[in-house]
Length: 412
Image (cartoon, rainbow, N blue to C red; front, top):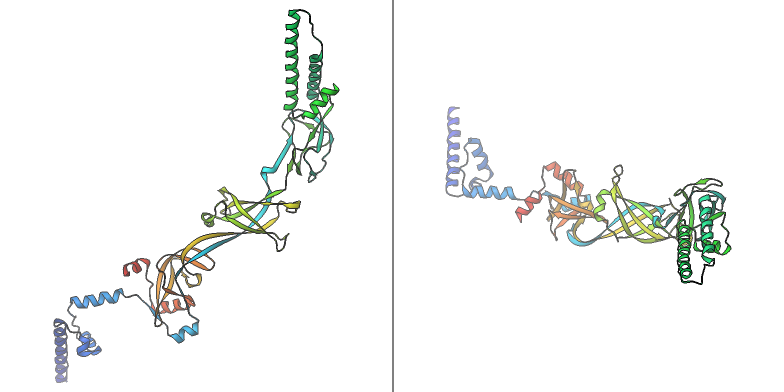
């Protein structure tokens, strides 16, 4: 028994000595003993002396990219497909919902600048269509009636004869004529400032009789969308009587999410469809982006203007809006090739011969099933575009960690 132990110890000493000699001579122990040499050295507990070639080999092995090996048969079974990373033109389509609103530039408010009472009301319900110049209401105003009488008296005075025959009479007549003309002009101007039309002023001047009630006319074509006037009610200066909206054009107001706002610019084209017109599309452009953001929905409003022939488009109708944005040429990969863990985004690069390298990437905008690549890949490389999650599962089982964009940059 003792002899056997002596023999084992002697053999171990000889092997250890040969390994030390091999390292000092620059020989690889594998050439001397293969794998058995390593196991014998580990059995003796003798540490291998460090050397420059061994360190370089270990550093090279550490820098090698981690890969996952999947045979061709295995790739066919799980449906692996690869796509080349390339620079392509991409378009982003933003789909949202819009709502038809009145064109605020074509809404007119009707009110008065004098106190009075409505004696006759021509527009007796909301929604009625009126044309420019149609009568809306007749208003009696004591103040306006008095001003008309003053205007008539001034006209009569200007037409009356003045003393003549002397130089003094001539001068006095000229001054009186000038004064009377100034008074008539001032009275006319006062009536005009109270929105009395020139035709009405001319009629008062010709007839010499004040008009008991003054008619208020519509300033535009459109629909009465708000009516505050009632028969017999008292009207105060500045009080709103009617709101009249011209619906020849309408606005469409749409909501755009906060993260999409950098892509939205005035002038971008959009297609607009309504369930009211199945199969029909309107083409418009963004003419305004509102400056404020809704705190509840985190959206901003954008505006489109479209013609409303025949008045068939009604305010508060809903519309489907598609804004197509040309993003130019970008380095892109398929969206399906990306494994998003929440903390990072990983793709599997095809290295050939069944090897796939997991690589962390930085991605930009996405459109049409593609994602822009900011860092981590270059044009010409191939990535797994389908079954990437199955490759990722195999990678997780084998404990393979993906390269970061810094590692890729250092490799290059």
